[in-house]
Image 1 (cartoon, rainbow, N blue to C red):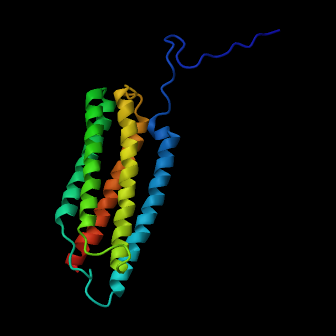
Image 2 (spheres, rainbow, N blue to C red; image 1 turned 180 degrees about the horizontal axis):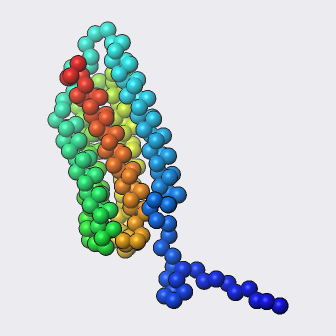
Image 3 (cartoon, one colour; image 1 turned 180 degrees about the vertical axis):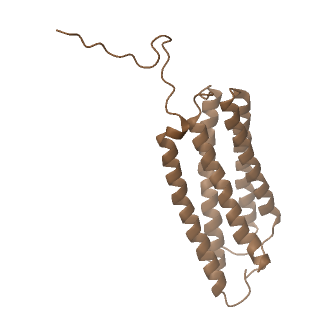
Length: 205
């Protein structure tokens, strides 16, 4: 009889476990890309609805005058800065700099939290509500969906930050961080589209 010898998992000479899938071959990457395409379609439909209602509006649009650019512009800078921070965190992981990774993730999380806080302040100051008129419904629906995506991103950043503190990421093992960074960059790009549609387009027309 011949014996079947079990093959060791990982590197037999060092006893180390396998690193895992690389970024471009990770199933998580394709899952995230699918999610991004789906959510991009959602926001495309919402923005299309906004412009369609705008084209059919009989009177002044927006009904309550031009929206203030102060808080929205600050939030735009905040989200762009947070994308730079998570990019820096990803670069830190690829270069074996755990301190840079942790600092970048922490900064991105704090900036995202400030974004939500400022968005809530802006909501509170609006003279209309979700059910006031079509403009109010579209404004709160679009910005609300985006803020929900930011909140989901904050939960993701907390998990990534905990993993970074635990030393999970390295130059060979950073696929979750790179995948999470894709989602956060997507959130920033969507906000640029929302900002252009809700705040800038009425001033250009």
